Image 1 (tube, one colour):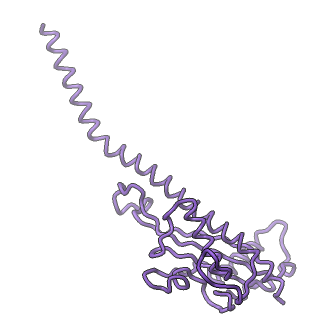
Image 2 (cartoon, helix red, strand yellow; image 1 turned 90 degrees about the vertical axis):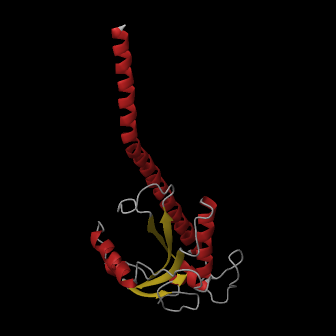
Image 3 (cartoon, rainbow, N blue to C red; image 1 turned 180 degrees about the vertical axis):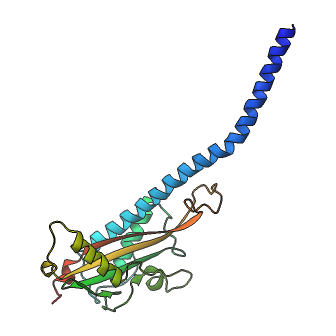
Length: 228
């Protein structure tokens, strides 16, 4: 009988020890699981906004920049810059409805002119106004209740990228052979939030809120043909 009582006592102690160990390990396991989900959601969101910039730039590259083209709502507009931004919004909504928040996110559209291996200028609307970029917040919402973004790629940065491309190409490219060209650049700025919200604040690798930025650059033959 004493042997049975001793075995029962040992089993109770083992069960108690297991419960204590589980209680100590559970928060760590929960954080690992939550972190895995958050990282997956982060990259899924980034790929979604990246695909939206590609689709918008690719479809806009064949359009004409003509100030006489009608500028109405997103479903009917033919205005080059607005149409590119609306295509980006449609791509976001089609893949993840509600992802684009006009109050916090922004879409920038630019047309950059490269002439004789020099980033010459940047147009911000179909009237060929020189400026930073066409902004969804500024042009569609009138700047009310939203935060206007500014391009991370000013002309000076694009010029450096072009020089790096020429210098790193194999075989080397003769700068004098690069044709004059026009490019449309579509950028999306999206404020990303944690999906579960279980990761505590203060972690640099998994912040509770971060600004995502994706962009795509495509040549615009219709504009390039008019560059002298």
